[in-house]
Amino acid sequence: MPIQHLDKIDREILKVLQADARIPNVDLADRVGLSASPCARRVKALEDAGIISRYATVVDQKSVGLPVSVFVSVTLERQVEGALATFETQILRRPEVMECYLMTGEADYLLRVVVADLDAYERFLILHLTRVPGIANIRSSFALKQVAYRTELPIV
Image 1: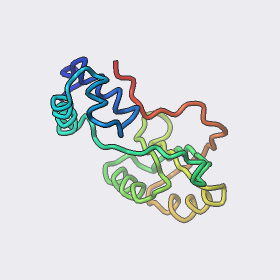
Image 2: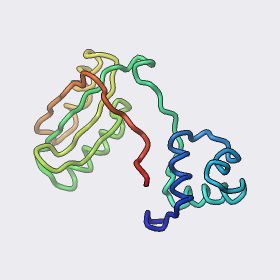
Image 3: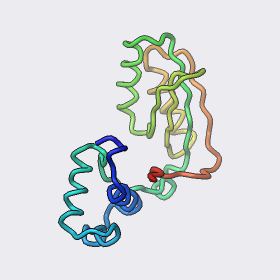
């Protein structure tokens, strides 16, 4: 279901679910102005269309002993399909990597890595990242403070 086919109620359902995925269907229906059955059908249709891809719990990383966020720019030796696939396959295996983007510009990839401390990042870097074939350059930037972090898309 492309975004242009979402009506006002679908968009409101998405807004409410992004803020509280555990909201009971009856409460969701009330918030969006539907009865429970049509609301449940709409949510199911949004799931079936892949617009709602999954439900998740957002955990405070500091509270679970992972206070360090590192943004890592990776440049490959060559930007060819095989090298890209190899890098992506290897990086998807690492639980420390929270996000990975194929980029334009100076670096080929930008990663967000979450670890407990500098020693843990050093282990990740030496034991895992530097062992991925085809990497030419790695640049790490440590986040000092998280100013904004959102999981909710600005659906209008």
